[in-house]
Image (cartoon, rainbow, N blue to C red; front, side):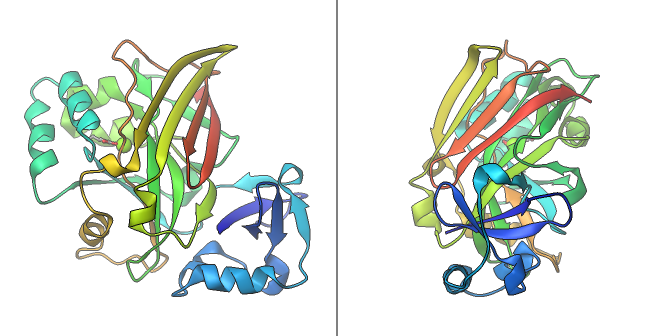
Length: 285
Ligand code: DO4
Ligand code: MG
């Protein structure tokens, strides 16, 4: 089952259950006001099924505006979890290259802070490229939706927008390459009721369109993530608490060729087979 946040005619955010590819059941009249409260339950998919059987308002997906499925959660990310990412980071870096080589094999993963909820954009909104960067790419990533007890209770799609020239110049510039206005997109849905074994059968596809032309296409499998899911979450929760839960992006396995950079107006489509498609246009910020 899938959950979403949406607005119909302006006003407050509502919580919805996505029952088929076109219909949303509005759970807000049943007393559900946040995605996080549902995800605190041990079995959110059972709760969702019970709620969805009630006589609640329904909307077509085309009638609503989907919002990013994040409320008060901090958004974090792991890096260098795919061999492809290790190679790309080493290629773009000079004296920092060995850091990526080492972290790929080290017991402790690379974890970095990515965004506060208010900086996250949702489906059909624009992601940003920095005006002081020359080499910008999307990073299409599976995102864990984690509750306050450190349990992965859902999966969504994330875009960890990155400025490769800033990241490659010096590892200490990583926060500037990763954190700026509109540098993170999440959505469109939270898939609940799937476990790691199932998620590892999913594929990720990235397509970038410029006008009528597809300027990049790539594909990978979630099975290529080197570390197991619980290991990643356990490092995130070491010595820190997340009273509202957290979102964790799990790294990119798709990197366009080194001569590719995003341009304003590009359309980025990220599809994860078990979840859906996250689509965003690009603006300069
Ligand atoms: O250290 C660089 C970040 C790498 C990253 O974001 C990724 O592998 O997805
Ligand atoms: Mg990334």
